[in-house]
Length: 346
View 1 (cartoon, rainbow, N blue to C red):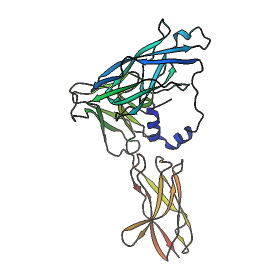
View 2: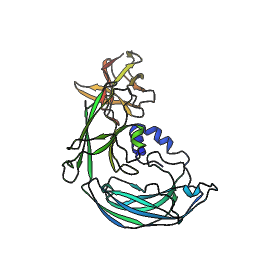
View 3: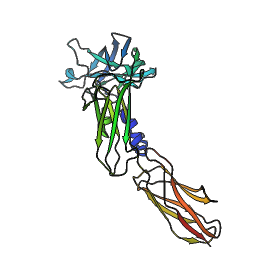
View 4: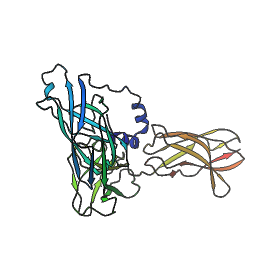
């Protein structure tokens, strides 16, 4: 079970994600049975970067036949049923088995949980939200909690340069502010700055950096042919309580050439080329010049996993006809265009 990972994977590899989503799902742990789940509070108010604990208690059994069963913790999972906060799920910490046979411990509730959440399952631990588990939660329709979250955090980022050339280093200026006032919180904040897997496999409350008192931290990133997912996470326990993750913008560098530079009118002439990256799965268009300045799409295709594409030109008249290959903005790639190429209709 993964949460932030779904968002990150959509940014980085949508085609791969589509394939993974069809894979067989895990099943609940057959050794775990749940009799009841209760909470000591059904409503809390939380402000800013604070968290308020709610104690959750689970009654049930865990019997796998191992002498270590009594030491097996569980985690309670709550899903959002209403409200507008950033979080879609809440997790308890790893709940230890107590002497009376119950599991009990806190759910740390942040302001970004603003809204209502309902207990939907329990799973054996230790479980960390980013890295997931080999089993699905054991379904359980439990109590709901109502969260009034105010002064929630807002994370922004400014990338320099705005569009990052391949293999060139860049910097990101991150800022954390109070979304309600638009001002910083006024103290140095612990944040986690990561890339790629560290953005989705985080478990708290660890952090990597401190902001200044304006909530700002700037980090330099090395150049690479692969543009990673970058993120700022606000530490929580066990999961982040807020975040911003994205893939910085890349230029679309398009190269193309026709199979022939002249062909009889009406003949199909393949135009092949590549887009650096590659931005596979993105659309690509062959455009022909009409009049002095109007480019119109005459053929469309999709960039393959190799980064290459094939389009079809078809000279419509005798004479030298200008074409270009246009790449519309797609995911983190900005729009780009090839050099003008010519095919003579004969």
